[in-house]
Length: 440
Image (cartoon, rainbow, N blue to C red; front, top):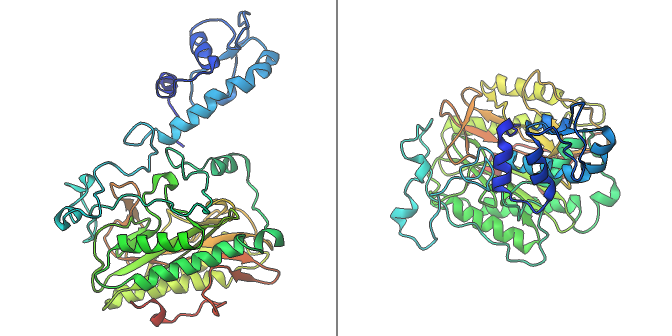
């Protein structure tokens, strides 16, 4: 994490003027010998500093005794909360946004002239692209029009931060075990995954030569609304759209825009839905649009087979780190490489949680699979080398050599003697390669 520097308390006080007297009081005592506890007039003889402030990189504050520190901590920790918020937004292009927030100059209305829609966003001028794909402008962010939709905590956060995920990351190292009450019933985890499958299928049906990825976003968004689901990507760390669409050399997190899909493109559609029960279901597929060349078809099938091989290993007792070895072997046998930057993840009531599921060989993932674990496996497979870089929109990950990349993803449940693919197609409990299903 990029914590605030020691001099950033002034920034915190400026950006977040607070009604809590504790902030002003502690700031004033930074340069004195007085105790930082409000109302305490004792002189600090032993420099007892707050360890959390030091961890966050804030200027140290001192207390006259452990008792004084404990009594004032409920107020004092306000500074820690504010410091964390600043840390999340510290490298963003504007105050009050997250470092992942896309820059300005990237959108235009739906009724704009076509020439404007197809123009480069501001960040892309003089940008050095690794491949042939170019972005266009985006449509405005879509609204949640269904009042029944439950909104995750980041939906209305100014920087799109999931505070529940932040708390989980800071305090929980355990992999959650889901039981029947959480898996079954209307709007629970199994339902969220089934809705994700339906929404992806709707997006896939709309994909064809000449359609824009923005249109795919519209279809996915409306399909989620019809099913009383929130499209999980929307405003997650300020992601501006309801689905990720990754074309050709884009590895993941592509932002839907006004560009029309071309004959011969490969397009990944990554959908996550959040149900009224408070659960996420996550999956993606890569489609071949029109007359895709042999290399494109090869990387798409290899990505499928990598996921297929990994899911065949999922059962109680399997080490999470071992999935990467299997994926690596399949990719290498097909003269492809595995992206190391992005990994699978635990999912359920949180969009991203433990465990981390790396897809590459010799990783150091912790944990052993147990019945009731729910997580995603989503290997990103490249025709060329494994390295990636991120466009100036702060989201779109592309291959550094410009060669194409493909991906498939499922959310899976570890069962007593194997796994259940919660996001599987109807009547397809086991992954089976069928090129007709991904042809558009």
